[in-house]
Image 1 (cartoon, rainbow over the protein chains, first blue to last red):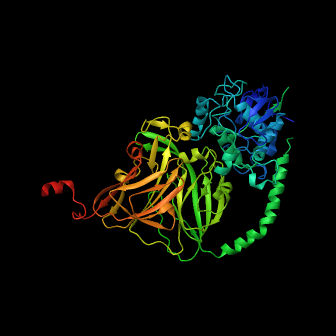
Image 2 (cartoon, each protein chain N blue to C red):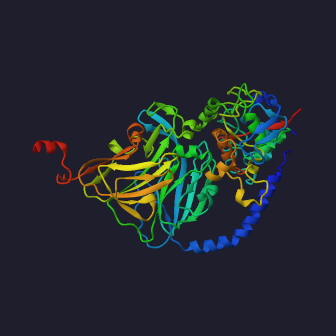
Length: 250
Length: 348
């Protein structure tokens, strides 16, 4: 099996193996407290940057069933990679911009091809709580306002390259201010542990229910992430939605 | 080869939706029978301050409403811009007008250019969430939701996506009028106005593109309190117009998210105020309070020409935060009702 780390020197320039950085784990005060306000997060490794168009092209070249014309609609709607010129040409998008318009199924398959998986919500939330010097910057109003600023800017036709935002304390780039990102359990975030508890379902679609079920009410940027994930089905593709992968700790 | 694997959560979700589907099949087909014979209408949706035409039908219909959610940059006051989140590109969103007993099929499309997900909760709906769970949509997606307009009245609709106070503070509200079965008395002029509070780091008119200020919103410390989403949306060339003697009806609502309106028209007395947008009216009212997520219908007759001024009578809001609008009245003078100062001086 070919992997996305293969080197197609003549076509794309040589791509190095994806860079994964260690994240020590710990206790996370989560915005989605399903079983108490904190959750333990085991150590893991996370891709330092989101998957790019060039990387995803290598993946679809090696796995033709994930090319635009081949992917079954059950796993990817016709918005899948719809900005690409063809099934095997990401132009006019730049090679180092994050790949978007990918379904959850396609993103999962990509991560599997790297020997990895999509992060769980708590893994993503844990890594994204950090800024350049702190593992949890979420109490800092200035940091929150900076992240929130991204949502005030209109969507752009062409996304900038990955890695342009400074890395956080773990060496991870672009968790904020570039794209939305898939998580592995996006459709399991809002289900109660006991499905018989019809009256207490933790749903986000309505304002009243959301105010009861959300833990970090002043972190609007994270609440918007959660709302977006709640709006998705696994086969959906959105122009501002990409992904990165995680691996178990070494 | 990569493999397609269902997560355990997917299996559970699949199973439960399958069971739900089987369970509600009978109810669904009964509903389909009941609405199949209704005439179908596409709702006329006008940008504020215009109001859709009164309903002349005497029987129920299925009304198809096509709404979009759009994120647009526009002037909040001359020289200062703001990124508004809207229904249909305007603040407030397009007004919907149906008749009591109508079945409303609402199509909501979130434009691909949007950054965030949106949905809609209509206060005219009887049922959990008011349509919000059925319509939560990512950018580029659409959703359909059907409800029966059981109760007449003037109802607010708004986006209910988390963080909901931010979606509303960015302008995501509008109104739906459900006319009573008996219809409404004809008038000469109808207009649609909503008040909303806006939160920016800079003070009123600070210039540039101002972002949303979360802390000011939580503190309920508004930078702008506006009619129809801009300080000049009802002034100058945008002023409302009427003639002396016209019966004027205003559909007025408060989007909020936080500030109630003390709605007053300088130079007029409301003959009727359908308090809180309901069926009963109070008479001879100067100022009426409208809570966020609430509405009122006011009726009055301008008696003399000149400018009437719409304000929130908590007057710092009108004169420092933008809550001001003009109704320009033309027609014949009636000095026996209102003598202008210059004329009065000349007569002395």
